[in-house]
Length: 329
Image (tube, rainbow, N blue to C red):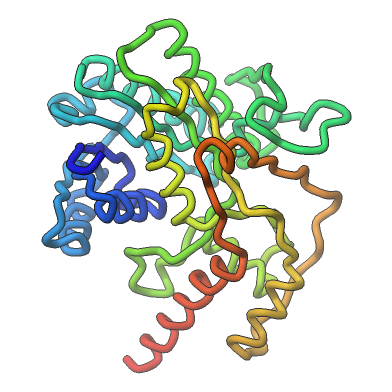
């Protein structure tokens, strides 16, 4: 509802900035948290004149991280999550930060009676067991693996597996919290595939990171072809806002994704629109990724997905713009 106040974590992040932008356009007010003082200045400049304020939360895993910061808030969008894909201390670098980040936010929200709903950004990774889907399963959906067992102290095979385990455990914690604590607010979790699109705060090529970085590395053969399941970042932001609808059932999960694309088609499109010798693909992945069944998001949230061409236009187009800008300096 217009005028209501949303608290957004991870405000300086890829998804967080788009969520703030979409929410402001929809008439919401924003209070949002960042980890560093410099990020406050960047966001205040970008959203100058808008009904948005930014607060500093240096460590979102400490118990009093949000003390006094949620007063008067109507909704929380907990977008921030530690993403350390280089550490090897699995529990310290991955599991505990993800779970504790959710725990601290839910504990803080439970103390603020004005909060009606908390929406947590999770991942498709939290819906898939570490060993893969059950035998015979052809698609991933919100309840394709109702019971997923993960030992947080196990020795994971690598960073991505540890990241997946952290998303599984943080998602389980959130839903278990609701069942056990029964707070006055309701909970919805959003589970995107790989997120692509324009980075609102990126001002140089050197700032290319995350999933957009993986996209560019894939079409320049710096890495083998990765997942061909993606979603436009604006669709992810829209899903969070649609999830605030009080008609959406408490405890709902929504898998959000555009249908699979073919990297060969992406490459042909990029070569035609931005001619260059740099565009090429590496080795194809072994096997097929399971289909992402997004019927719930389409029917309940009313989601309509932006195409892979729109994702490509925003990712490659932004890099082309920055390259041209830097060439003039």
